[in-house]
Amino acid sequence: MLTITTQNHEQTRAIGERLGRMLHKGSIIALIGGLGAGKTVVSQGIASGLGIDEDITSPTFLIVKEYTSGRLPLYHFDLYRFDTPNQLDFFSIDEYLFGNGVCVIEWAEKIEHMLPSEHLRIEIQWLKEDQRQINLILKGEISPDDNNYQAIIKSMRGQRI
Ligand SMILES: Nc1ncnc2c1ncn2[C@@H]1O[C@H](COP(=O)(O)OP(=O)(O)O)[C@@H](O)[C@H]1O
Ligand SMILES: [Mg+2]
Image (tube, rainbow, N blue to C red; front, side, top):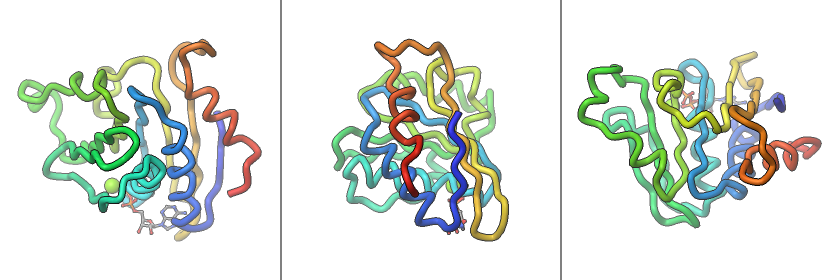
């Protein structure tokens, strides 16, 4: 696990941006944190790191929005109003999770049981008005060959924010 404390939203966005530059096809980022924690800020940073030039807005009523102007497709989920399990009947999340892009999932705890065991979990905790604690947690088996999350965390360790 890597813990970073940010002092403003630009720093949180910058963490997302660094991640976005390193993510791969099939990467899954589970964002956990209360309302106003900064999940959307991280998502916007990831989009920017992927080279997406569209505005990233919260897809609250759509569940997922796709952005295709970057290096890889971004599937941005916001499950705040997602009512499991009823809505799962008409929503095939696997198409995204095992698709060709990067999945960034706000309120991912709601579908934790459906996520592939290997993913990057980002917990954001509100500390003060402009201060957040961000925990980057590698989930699943640690196998250097096919687990790029480990390499990402390693490269972010020790970097200045
Ligand atoms: N260090 C910080 N990191 C992220 N957001 C911050 C920080 N400090 C203040 N903020 C503010 O907190 C809010 C986070 O909003 P948002 O990303 O939409 O939250 P969430 O998607 O988790 O509900 C934004 O208004 C942002 O400017
Ligand atoms: Mg949000």
